[in-house]
Amino acid sequence: RETIQAGPNSIWRYRPFLPVETNQPIDVGTGMTPLVQAKRLARRLGLNKLYIKNDAVNMPTLSFKDRVVSVALTRAKELGFSTVSCASTGNLANSTAAIAAHAGLDCCVFIPADLEAGKVMGTLIYGPTVMAVQGNYDQVNRLCSEVANTHGWGFVNINLRPYYSEGSKTLGYEVAEQLGWQLPDHIVAPLASGSLFTKIYKGFREFVDVGLVADKHVRFSGAQADGCSPIAQAYREGRDFVTPVKPSTIAKSLAIGNPADGVYAIDIARKTNGNIASVSDAEIIAGIKLLAETEGIFTETAGGTTVAVLQKLVEAGKIDPDETTVVYITGNGLKTQEAMQGYIGEPFTIEPKLDSFERALERS
Image 1 (cartoon, rainbow, N blue to C red):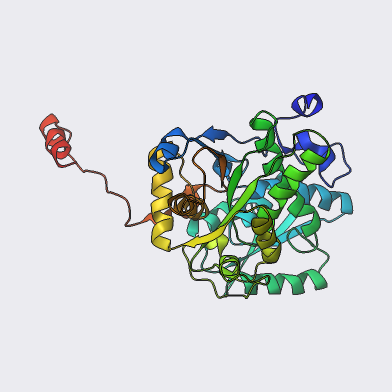
Image 2 (spheres, one colour; image 1 turned 135 degrees about the vertical axis):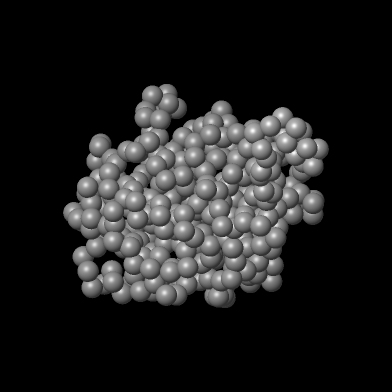
Protein backbone atom coordinates (compact mmCIF):
# COMPACT_ATOMS: atom_id res chain seq x y z
CA ARG A 1 0.00 0.00 0.00
CA GLU A 2 2.78 2.42 0.89
CA THR A 3 4.50 1.88 -2.46
CA ILE A 4 1.29 2.57 -4.36
CA GLN A 5 0.54 5.69 -2.33
CA ALA A 6 4.07 6.99 -2.92
CA GLY A 7 3.61 6.64 -6.68
CA PRO A 8 2.34 9.21 -9.18
CA ASN A 9 -1.13 10.70 -8.79
CA SER A 10 -2.33 8.83 -11.87
CA ILE A 11 -3.13 5.32 -13.06
CA TRP A 12 0.60 4.64 -13.19
CA ARG A 13 0.77 4.27 -9.41
CA TYR A 14 -0.57 0.79 -10.29
CA ARG A 15 2.04 0.09 -13.00
CA PRO A 16 3.01 -3.38 -11.64
CA PHE A 17 -0.59 -4.48 -12.28
CA LEU A 18 -0.65 -3.22 -15.88
CA PRO A 19 0.68 -5.01 -19.01
CA VAL A 20 3.61 -2.75 -19.84
CA GLU A 21 7.36 -3.16 -19.40
CA THR A 22 8.66 0.40 -19.42
CA ASN A 23 9.39 2.51 -16.36
CA GLN A 24 8.46 5.58 -18.43
CA PRO A 25 4.85 5.08 -19.50
CA ILE A 26 2.80 7.75 -21.27
CA ASP A 27 1.57 9.70 -18.25
CA VAL A 28 -0.76 12.60 -18.97
CA GLY A 29 -2.22 12.72 -15.47
CA THR A 30 -4.91 10.16 -16.21
CA GLY A 31 -6.79 8.67 -13.28
CA MET A 32 -7.15 9.27 -9.54
CA THR A 33 -10.43 11.03 -10.26
CA PRO A 34 -12.69 12.01 -7.36
CA LEU A 35 -14.78 9.49 -5.45
CA VAL A 36 -17.56 11.79 -4.28
CA GLN A 37 -19.94 10.94 -1.46
CA ALA A 38 -23.24 11.82 -3.14
CA LYS A 39 -25.27 12.84 -0.09
CA ARG A 40 -27.98 14.86 -1.86
CA LEU A 41 -28.55 12.25 -4.56
CA ALA A 42 -28.57 9.56 -1.88
CA ARG A 43 -31.27 11.40 0.09
CA ARG A 44 -33.34 11.83 -3.09
CA LEU A 45 -33.17 8.09 -3.76
CA GLY A 46 -33.44 6.89 -0.16
CA LEU A 47 -29.88 5.58 0.11
CA ASN A 48 -27.41 6.09 2.94
CA LYS A 49 -23.97 5.31 1.48
CA LEU A 50 -23.79 6.38 -2.16
CA TYR A 51 -20.60 7.38 -3.96
CA ILE A 52 -19.93 8.71 -7.46
CA LYS A 53 -16.68 7.73 -9.18
CA ASN A 54 -16.38 10.80 -11.37
CA ASP A 55 -14.44 10.18 -14.58
CA ALA A 56 -16.24 13.14 -16.13
CA VAL A 57 -13.17 15.07 -14.98
CA ASN A 58 -10.57 12.54 -16.10
CA MET A 59 -7.54 13.87 -17.97
CA PRO A 60 -6.88 14.77 -20.68
CA THR A 61 -10.24 14.32 -22.50
CA LEU A 62 -12.85 14.00 -19.73
CA SER A 63 -13.76 10.31 -19.98
CA PHE A 64 -12.63 6.95 -18.66
CA LYS A 65 -11.23 6.14 -22.10
CA ASP A 66 -8.09 8.09 -21.17
CA ARG A 67 -7.22 5.19 -18.87
CA VAL A 68 -7.38 2.46 -21.49
CA VAL A 69 -5.67 4.56 -24.16
CA SER A 70 -2.77 5.49 -21.87
CA VAL A 71 -2.06 1.79 -21.38
CA ALA A 72 -2.64 0.84 -25.04
CA LEU A 73 -0.40 3.56 -26.47
CA THR A 74 2.35 2.91 -23.95
CA ARG A 75 2.34 -0.69 -25.14
CA ALA A 76 2.07 0.42 -28.79
CA LYS A 77 5.33 2.34 -28.44
CA GLU A 78 6.98 -0.66 -26.82
CA LEU A 79 5.86 -2.81 -29.77
CA GLY A 80 7.20 -0.31 -32.30
CA PHE A 81 3.97 1.07 -33.79
CA SER A 82 4.33 4.54 -35.32
CA THR A 83 0.64 4.98 -36.26
CA VAL A 84 -2.26 4.31 -33.91
CA SER A 85 -5.97 4.12 -34.60
CA CYS A 86 -9.35 3.10 -33.20
CA ALA A 87 -13.00 2.51 -33.96
CA SER A 88 -14.97 4.83 -31.72
CA THR A 89 -18.36 6.13 -30.65
CA GLY A 90 -16.58 9.35 -29.67
CA ASN A 91 -14.78 9.24 -26.34
CA LEU A 92 -12.18 6.76 -27.53
CA ALA A 93 -11.44 8.90 -30.60
CA ASN A 94 -10.94 11.96 -28.37
CA SER A 95 -8.56 10.09 -26.11
CA THR A 96 -6.60 8.29 -28.82
CA ALA A 97 -6.04 11.53 -30.73
CA ALA A 98 -4.99 13.49 -27.63
CA ILE A 99 -2.63 10.93 -26.15
CA ALA A 100 -1.14 10.12 -29.57
CA ALA A 101 -0.37 13.83 -29.98
CA HIS A 102 1.34 13.89 -26.58
CA ALA A 103 3.34 10.76 -27.42
CA GLY A 104 4.35 11.92 -30.91
CA LEU A 105 2.49 9.12 -32.71
CA ASP A 106 0.64 9.46 -36.01
CA CYS A 107 -3.09 8.93 -35.59
CA CYS A 108 -6.08 8.00 -37.75
CA VAL A 109 -9.45 7.40 -36.08
CA PHE A 110 -12.74 6.02 -37.40
CA ILE A 111 -16.12 7.26 -36.16
CA PRO A 112 -19.78 7.00 -37.23
CA ALA A 113 -20.67 9.97 -39.43
CA ASP A 114 -23.60 11.00 -37.17
CA LEU A 115 -21.49 11.50 -34.05
CA GLU A 116 -22.17 14.40 -31.68
CA ALA A 117 -20.47 17.63 -32.78
CA GLY A 118 -18.64 18.04 -29.47
CA LYS A 119 -16.96 14.67 -29.83
CA VAL A 120 -15.97 15.36 -33.44
CA MET A 121 -14.44 18.74 -32.50
CA GLY A 122 -12.83 17.14 -29.46
CA THR A 123 -11.01 14.77 -31.80
CA LEU A 124 -10.10 17.06 -34.70
CA ILE A 125 -8.39 19.59 -32.42
CA TYR A 126 -5.46 17.21 -31.85
CA GLY A 127 -4.67 16.97 -35.56
CA PRO A 128 -5.40 13.32 -36.42
CA THR A 129 -6.87 12.00 -39.65
CA VAL A 130 -10.57 11.39 -38.97
CA MET A 131 -12.63 8.98 -41.06
CA ALA A 132 -16.38 9.58 -40.62
CA VAL A 133 -18.01 6.34 -41.78
CA GLN A 134 -21.57 6.27 -43.09
CA GLY A 135 -22.77 3.53 -40.79
CA ASN A 136 -23.19 2.59 -37.13
CA TYR A 137 -20.42 1.67 -34.71
CA ASP A 138 -20.54 -2.03 -35.47
CA GLN A 139 -20.01 -1.28 -39.17
CA VAL A 140 -17.14 1.06 -38.27
CA ASN A 141 -15.58 -1.67 -36.16
CA ARG A 142 -15.80 -4.25 -38.95
CA LEU A 143 -14.11 -1.82 -41.36
CA CYS A 144 -11.34 -1.21 -38.83
CA SER A 145 -10.72 -4.95 -38.51
CA GLU A 146 -10.12 -5.05 -42.27
CA VAL A 147 -7.83 -2.01 -42.13
CA ALA A 148 -5.89 -3.55 -39.24
CA ASN A 149 -5.21 -6.58 -41.43
CA THR A 150 -3.87 -4.49 -44.33
CA HIS A 151 -1.96 -1.68 -42.57
CA GLY A 152 0.71 -1.91 -39.91
CA TRP A 153 -1.19 0.26 -37.45
CA GLY A 154 -1.89 -0.24 -33.79
CA PHE A 155 -5.67 -0.22 -33.29
CA VAL A 156 -6.23 0.30 -29.58
CA ASN A 157 -9.47 -1.70 -29.50
CA ILE A 158 -8.52 -4.36 -32.07
CA ASN A 159 -4.94 -5.63 -32.22
CA LEU A 160 -4.00 -3.76 -29.01
CA ARG A 161 -7.24 -4.68 -27.23
CA PRO A 162 -5.68 -7.12 -24.71
CA TYR A 163 -3.57 -4.24 -23.36
CA TYR A 164 -6.20 -1.53 -23.83
CA SER A 165 -8.88 -3.32 -21.83
CA GLU A 166 -6.59 -3.78 -18.83
CA GLY A 167 -6.56 -0.02 -18.28
CA SER A 168 -10.13 -0.19 -17.00
CA LYS A 169 -8.96 -2.21 -14.00
CA THR A 170 -7.69 1.06 -12.55
CA LEU A 171 -11.31 2.10 -11.91
CA GLY A 172 -11.49 -0.84 -9.52
CA TYR A 173 -8.10 -0.18 -7.95
CA GLU A 174 -8.86 3.49 -7.30
CA VAL A 175 -12.24 2.89 -5.69
CA ALA A 176 -10.73 0.31 -3.35
CA GLU A 177 -7.93 2.68 -2.37
CA GLN A 178 -10.23 5.70 -2.02
CA LEU A 179 -12.62 3.77 0.23
CA GLY A 180 -9.72 3.23 2.63
CA TRP A 181 -8.51 -0.05 1.14
CA GLN A 182 -11.96 -1.62 1.23
CA LEU A 183 -14.32 -2.89 -1.45
CA PRO A 184 -17.85 -1.49 -1.82
CA ASP A 185 -20.98 -3.61 -1.43
CA HIS A 186 -22.47 -2.78 -4.82
CA ILE A 187 -21.36 -1.05 -8.03
CA VAL A 188 -23.45 0.24 -10.92
CA ALA A 189 -21.65 0.84 -14.22
CA PRO A 190 -22.63 1.44 -17.86
CA LEU A 191 -22.47 -1.37 -20.41
CA ALA A 192 -21.43 -0.87 -24.03
CA SER A 193 -19.06 -3.67 -25.09
CA GLY A 194 -19.06 -4.96 -21.50
CA SER A 195 -15.28 -4.63 -21.14
CA LEU A 196 -15.33 -1.89 -18.48
CA PHE A 197 -17.71 -3.92 -16.31
CA THR A 198 -15.58 -7.05 -16.45
CA LYS A 199 -12.34 -5.20 -15.78
CA ILE A 200 -13.64 -3.43 -12.67
CA TYR A 201 -14.44 -6.91 -11.39
CA LYS A 202 -10.96 -8.11 -12.34
CA GLY A 203 -9.37 -5.12 -10.60
CA PHE A 204 -11.17 -5.89 -7.34
CA ARG A 205 -10.20 -9.56 -7.53
CA GLU A 206 -6.53 -8.76 -8.17
CA PHE A 207 -6.38 -6.53 -5.09
CA VAL A 208 -7.94 -9.33 -3.03
CA ASP A 209 -5.53 -11.91 -4.46
CA VAL A 210 -2.42 -9.93 -3.46
CA GLY A 211 -3.79 -9.03 -0.03
CA LEU A 212 -4.28 -5.29 -0.56
CA VAL A 213 -7.95 -5.53 0.46
CA ALA A 214 -10.02 -8.05 2.36
CA ASP A 215 -12.23 -10.35 0.34
CA LYS A 216 -15.83 -9.26 0.14
CA HIS A 217 -18.92 -10.08 -1.88
CA VAL A 218 -19.47 -7.14 -4.25
CA ARG A 219 -22.66 -7.03 -6.31
CA PHE A 220 -22.26 -5.86 -9.91
CA SER A 221 -25.12 -4.15 -11.74
CA GLY A 222 -25.00 -2.88 -15.32
CA ALA A 223 -26.84 -0.13 -17.20
CA GLN A 224 -27.94 0.04 -20.83
CA ALA A 225 -30.24 2.19 -22.95
CA ASP A 226 -33.48 0.60 -24.18
CA GLY A 227 -32.47 1.54 -27.73
CA CYS A 228 -29.32 -0.59 -27.50
CA SER A 229 -29.75 -3.20 -24.80
CA PRO A 230 -28.58 -6.58 -26.10
CA ILE A 231 -26.89 -7.44 -22.80
CA ALA A 232 -29.88 -6.39 -20.68
CA GLN A 233 -32.26 -8.31 -22.94
CA ALA A 234 -30.20 -11.49 -22.65
CA TYR A 235 -30.00 -11.05 -18.87
CA ARG A 236 -33.77 -10.54 -18.52
CA GLU A 237 -34.54 -13.56 -20.70
CA GLY A 238 -32.14 -15.85 -18.84
CA ARG A 239 -29.92 -16.40 -21.88
CA ASP A 240 -26.17 -17.01 -21.75
CA PHE A 241 -25.66 -15.54 -25.22
CA VAL A 242 -26.21 -12.07 -26.66
CA THR A 243 -28.23 -11.41 -29.81
CA PRO A 244 -26.93 -8.38 -31.77
CA VAL A 245 -29.27 -5.40 -32.24
CA LYS A 246 -29.33 -2.26 -34.37
CA PRO A 247 -28.77 0.70 -32.01
CA SER A 248 -31.23 3.61 -31.79
CA THR A 249 -30.60 5.74 -28.70
CA ILE A 250 -29.32 9.14 -27.64
CA ALA A 251 -26.68 7.30 -25.58
CA LYS A 252 -24.32 6.98 -28.54
CA SER A 253 -21.30 6.08 -26.43
CA LEU A 254 -23.21 2.95 -25.37
CA ALA A 255 -24.52 2.18 -28.87
CA ILE A 256 -22.67 -1.07 -29.51
CA GLY A 257 -25.15 -3.53 -30.94
CA ASN A 258 -22.83 -6.54 -30.88
CA PRO A 259 -20.96 -6.30 -27.55
CA ALA A 260 -17.76 -8.36 -27.47
CA ASP A 261 -17.79 -8.93 -23.71
CA GLY A 262 -21.55 -9.11 -23.20
CA VAL A 263 -21.64 -12.74 -22.11
CA TYR A 264 -18.91 -12.12 -19.54
CA ALA A 265 -20.81 -9.14 -18.12
CA ILE A 266 -23.93 -11.30 -17.77
CA ASP A 267 -21.95 -13.98 -15.97
CA ILE A 268 -20.53 -11.46 -13.48
CA ALA A 269 -23.93 -9.90 -12.78
CA ARG A 270 -25.48 -13.30 -12.14
CA LYS A 271 -22.74 -14.77 -9.97
CA THR A 272 -22.54 -11.63 -7.81
CA ASN A 273 -26.34 -11.40 -7.41
CA GLY A 274 -26.35 -8.10 -9.27
CA ASN A 275 -28.63 -6.91 -12.06
CA ILE A 276 -28.59 -5.59 -15.61
CA ALA A 277 -31.34 -3.17 -16.58
CA SER A 278 -32.11 -0.69 -19.34
CA VAL A 279 -33.90 2.67 -19.45
CA SER A 280 -35.59 4.86 -22.06
CA ASP A 281 -34.08 7.97 -23.63
CA ALA A 282 -36.48 10.07 -21.54
CA GLU A 283 -35.21 8.40 -18.37
CA ILE A 284 -31.62 9.02 -19.51
CA ILE A 285 -32.33 12.76 -19.86
CA ALA A 286 -33.94 12.74 -16.41
CA GLY A 287 -30.88 10.93 -15.01
CA ILE A 288 -28.53 13.58 -16.40
CA LYS A 289 -30.64 16.34 -14.85
CA LEU A 290 -30.97 14.53 -11.52
CA LEU A 291 -27.21 14.14 -11.12
CA ALA A 292 -26.56 17.74 -12.15
CA GLU A 293 -29.21 19.21 -9.84
CA THR A 294 -28.24 17.14 -6.78
CA GLU A 295 -24.45 16.82 -7.06
CA GLY A 296 -23.32 19.49 -9.53
CA ILE A 297 -21.94 16.87 -11.93
CA PHE A 298 -22.77 17.23 -15.63
CA THR A 299 -22.51 13.80 -17.18
CA GLU A 300 -22.92 12.66 -20.75
CA THR A 301 -25.69 10.29 -21.81
CA ALA A 302 -23.85 7.17 -20.59
CA GLY A 303 -23.84 8.62 -17.09
CA GLY A 304 -27.49 9.56 -17.39
CA THR A 305 -28.17 5.94 -18.27
CA THR A 306 -26.29 4.73 -15.21
CA VAL A 307 -28.03 7.13 -12.82
CA ALA A 308 -31.43 6.23 -14.28
CA VAL A 309 -30.74 2.52 -13.86
CA LEU A 310 -29.56 3.18 -10.29
CA GLN A 311 -32.90 4.86 -9.59
CA LYS A 312 -34.79 2.01 -11.25
CA LEU A 313 -33.00 -0.60 -9.16
CA VAL A 314 -33.60 1.33 -5.94
CA GLU A 315 -37.31 1.65 -6.72
CA ALA A 316 -37.47 -2.09 -7.43
CA GLY A 317 -35.85 -2.89 -4.08
CA LYS A 318 -32.72 -4.27 -5.74
CA ILE A 319 -30.31 -2.03 -3.79
CA ASP A 320 -30.15 -2.11 0.00
CA PRO A 321 -30.24 1.45 1.40
CA ASP A 322 -27.38 0.62 3.77
CA GLU A 323 -25.09 -0.86 1.12
CA THR A 324 -21.98 1.10 0.18
CA THR A 325 -22.88 1.68 -3.46
CA VAL A 326 -20.54 3.16 -6.07
CA VAL A 327 -21.89 4.54 -9.35
CA TYR A 328 -19.43 4.98 -12.21
CA ILE A 329 -19.78 8.18 -14.25
CA THR A 330 -17.61 7.68 -17.30
CA GLY A 331 -17.83 10.88 -19.37
CA ASN A 332 -18.54 14.62 -19.37
CA GLY A 333 -21.83 16.19 -20.41
CA LEU A 334 -20.10 18.95 -22.37
CA LYS A 335 -19.52 16.30 -25.05
CA THR A 336 -23.21 15.51 -25.59
CA GLN A 337 -24.93 18.85 -25.16
CA GLU A 338 -27.23 18.22 -28.14
CA ALA A 339 -29.00 15.53 -26.14
CA MET A 340 -30.23 18.14 -23.65
CA GLN A 341 -31.56 20.67 -26.15
CA GLY A 342 -35.23 21.33 -25.48
CA TYR A 343 -35.15 19.58 -22.10
CA ILE A 344 -33.71 22.33 -19.92
CA GLY A 345 -34.78 25.92 -19.35
CA GLU A 346 -33.83 29.06 -21.24
CA PRO A 347 -32.18 32.15 -19.71
CA PHE A 348 -34.32 35.20 -18.97
CA THR A 349 -33.39 38.10 -21.25
CA ILE A 350 -33.64 41.36 -19.32
CA GLU A 351 -32.75 45.02 -19.69
CA PRO A 352 -29.87 46.36 -17.58
CA LYS A 353 -32.41 47.79 -15.11
CA LEU A 354 -33.45 46.69 -11.63
CA ASP A 355 -37.17 46.65 -12.41
CA SER A 356 -36.55 44.42 -15.44
CA PHE A 357 -34.68 42.01 -13.19
CA GLU A 358 -37.46 42.06 -10.58
CA ARG A 359 -40.13 41.24 -13.20
CA ALA A 360 -38.07 38.34 -14.49
CA LEU A 361 -37.46 37.09 -10.96
CA GLU A 362 -41.21 36.96 -10.34
CA ARG A 363 -41.65 34.78 -13.44
CA SER A 364 -38.81 32.43 -12.54
